[in-house]
Image 1 (cartoon, rainbow, N blue to C red):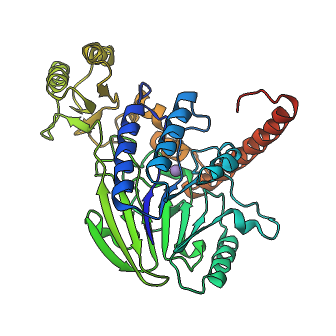
Image 2 (cartoon, rainbow, N blue to C red):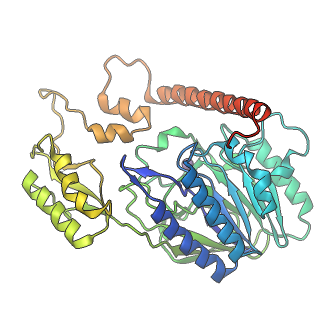
Length: 425
Ligand SMILES: [Mn+2]
């Protein structure tokens, strides 16, 4: 059984408050299509975070639909299995499940509810001629029993020892969360044991760096082979931030039989726009003028790409500095893209006699999604909770909010569809 495993497409992402990336995503899909045609996998699996936001724009959805249709046309034999991640609206994806089923794509949005009726597992099992895919989306909380139940169901049926792939969208213990400093606090890390046993390959999404759990040293090897079971993050389709300074790949996975060998080949994604830190020689700018000069040179030379500046801590940038940069870049039609979050080099450690300067700027704050990260940086006096307790409290609240808003959405969808059949989905 051969699959292509990818995840975290984040379609519709607007990066650095300014730039949309549809051409970069199109470039990714062109490569994906090429690989699917060449390698003829039995299935393409996308393990969550298809879209970057819960309600992607019409053009983002259209682009996704067109790409899937193209994949179907070019590789009619290949199954496509797509599951929701934490960025996706589970119920919105689920709403389109049956339409996509008609065209051979298995789309799973919502996770099984805790008190599911018998037979619930059928919505999550995709049967191929030569294997099984258990398509689990992002799930809140630990679901060991449910996962083990569905794995057992497949095991009962799998008398011919066909390979079993399970999908998931979660952070597991032992992963390397490089580049996720602002993001990772949203999910509890799950112990691998809590995901059940019985799969040969666990196709994970959520962490953007390609990696196989327990095989850190093999990170960038082009081809490896392990004994099943193997747990792997394919990594995201594109760099989602400047901090993700590593190659991005999709995983071509070949499994000979249940409990057999898992062969993984990394197919390197060529990105339309690359990420740079200026100056490119690793030093830092020592004046605002130098930095502006550096930006001009870079734009002139590269003509395309993302960049961030590294500036010596003693330099004070003028208040209109960002505007000066944007003015230079206006000649490049958004091909040269600026991340205003400066890397300060040589920042002195705070001493008791100096007033503690916040270690982030406005751009940082706008990208911060983890409240704990914020609290750590501002040093709240008389905080009577440990950071762990605080994190747990935040997680509880945010899971509750998510649950309530999903429910409200479900209700309003029901209402809409019963009162007005013409409303656009
Ligand atoms: Mn995610």
